[in-house]
Structure formats: C-alpha cells, structure tokens
Image 1 (cartoon, helix red, strand yellow):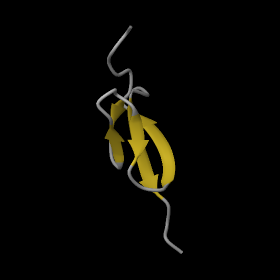
Image 2 (cartoon, rainbow, N blue to C red):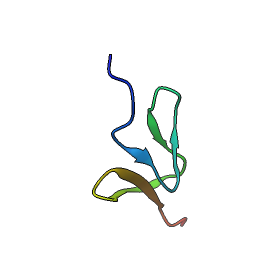
Image 3 (cartoon, rainbow, N blue to C red):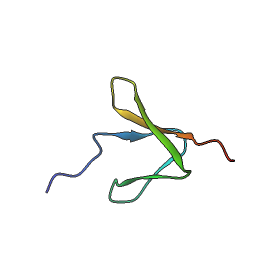
Length: 46
C-alpha cells in the first residue's frame, strides 16, 4: 500500500491521519505551487 500525500493542505484545508484532505470552510477549491498545494477560498457569506 502506498502511503503519503501527493497534495499538501493549504489555507482552510485539513488533513486526516490517512492523508485525506478536507475543507474547513465552504468555498472554491484552488491549487497552487505547481498544483501540489490545495487551498479553499471561502465563499462570501450572504
């Protein structure tokens, strides 16, 4: 079994102990750093 993370958590993104990424806030997913870091840009509260 391969273990590790191909994607790293950024802003508003958490990581489980099995390297699962999850959003900490509702919003839009954005990738940066050559597509390896995942950020969530919060949606505007209306």
